[in-house]
Image (cartoon, rainbow, N blue to C red; front, side, top):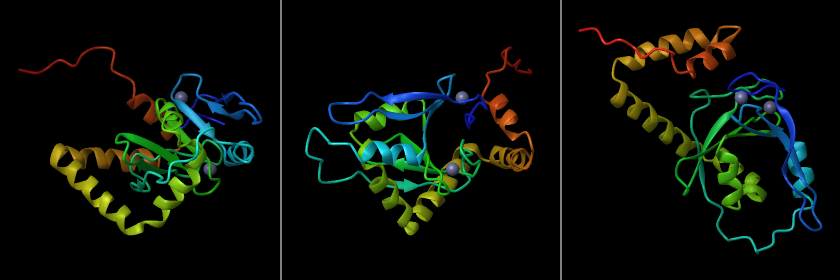
Length: 191
Ligand SMILES: [Zn+2]
Ligand SMILES: [Zn+2]
């Protein structure tokens, strides 16, 4: 299994130590700290034995699915494109889920955000809710396109042209990984 961001082989790890009466939660982590992959079978094995210490809050936060391909990652388990979700009301908090195997990817800090918000045991409710809200999803998607266009202008066409080329490239992981690296030399500004 490889990291969807850097292609490194993911390490098997214990994501949460067992609490009394429960069992530990196992998953996979990028050795370069890009994030955490939680396969559905390991998640449900853990959740079966999960007893929340506090009664669960009534409301499950909502989430939007934002675009099937925009900023999409490939599932470490089966290489299918993952759907990206924005979790509300905790703004700036994202999850990627594979519809094929049910695995969830958490970027670096998203894992801690999920655990701290007490959402780990409620992932299915959170993600299923989003899955079903097609209309909201499309609205969110349109808004996203508009915001990108406002901020990038014609540069967006350049980016999209490159993106279309990169996504059909057999070594796209290497391309995306390279793009995330900061260039060694600061760019000269031509006068
Ligand atoms: Zn990585
Ligand atoms: Zn998958």
